[in-house]
Image (spheres, protein in one colour):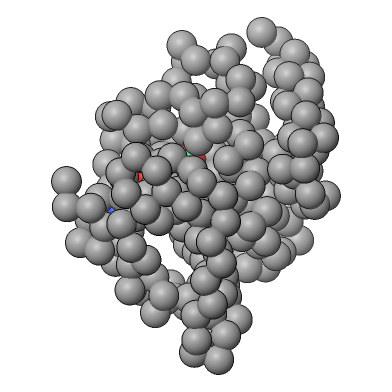
Length: 222
Ligand code: SAM
């Protein structure tokens, strides 16, 4: 498929997600139009990059469906200049979408943690090739502990399913900040939108979803 053909496919999916109401804001629409998902999937899946479903990226993990990236990014509501922590780098695609928004006019940064070293390397290569590596730092580690070195964060997004909200992530969210995280059991979760205000956390429970497990000290143990 040619470069232009991929862009046409991307635009078709983005227009469809706008028509369904999953994409609501210009910033999310523009970010999804700019990031080439075909560069974040393994070579055999390139021509399926704009089928709106999760795709395998190896090691039993997946790149999330496009509508789920749209829904989570809208819920997170990142702003230009924000410092964002992502848990679950996977392919680096969601990190690139966030980078499009937070680094738009200079400033802003995305710290993204991945527990599988080979996937962190895959994401680094994808982000480098597509020009996002100045805005995104990929770290290998257990993201359930957060990344205290760069805390506090304006926004935290978790792209794997947690049994509960990891305490370190609440602590590393700045006052006035927001976190989006799927919480539930292994086979169905609900997207939680958590606002921290005046030291209190306000939790809104949003749509049902299905993510691979968040494995770590404050997540699942296996
Ligand atoms: N955001 C990714 C993307 O754009 O491709 C998709 C994320 S995939 C659904 C979930 C990822 O979370 C997997 O790569 C998995 O290895 C990672 N993960 C699971 N537990 C983790 C943890 N404790 N810390 C960091 N990453 C974790």
